[in-house]
Picture 1 (cartoon, rainbow, N blue to C red):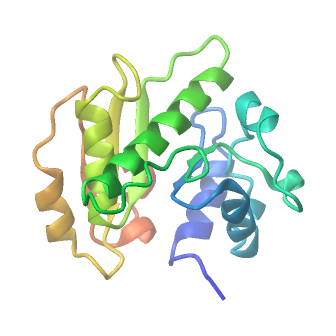
Picture 2 (cartoon, rainbow, N blue to C red):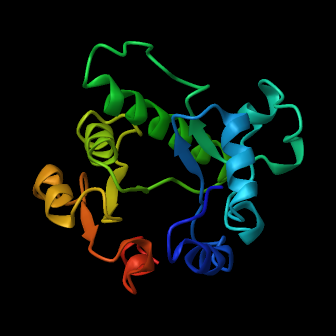
Length: 192
């Protein structure tokens, strides 16, 4: 079976208590129906941290057997270039999925403006995707994009930090955490 990484469930429970301060969604190359099933199987859905799906998501394809467990996000079923021979597409497709999730989030926060998108990831493609989103303005004008790179074992904090490069205040704010989501500074890194 699949299990969440250490610290994920407790942190998501804390986020569930702060839904007035932040929206929480998922970005993945999985199709939305598969992502829903995985989040339910791992107990992530049950934390209450994931924001409701956008109207756009609700009006799109129905995912049989998962109607009651929808949540905000950007998925492989929303965007996939299909260009598997081009190495940069791995992170550029993910960047498109981040932008889709950000657009959906903005559509749901009536009377408020989305100011910051925080992407959490443990792989080089996550860092490069968030960086592309920031530098290409894919999430919208004036929206800061951050990566919280979590060193989960496959890639070291040093590797993620090197890829992230230097911050550009107000545009690109990379943060790399040695202890992953279990790091005591995780919520602070999210701006909470």
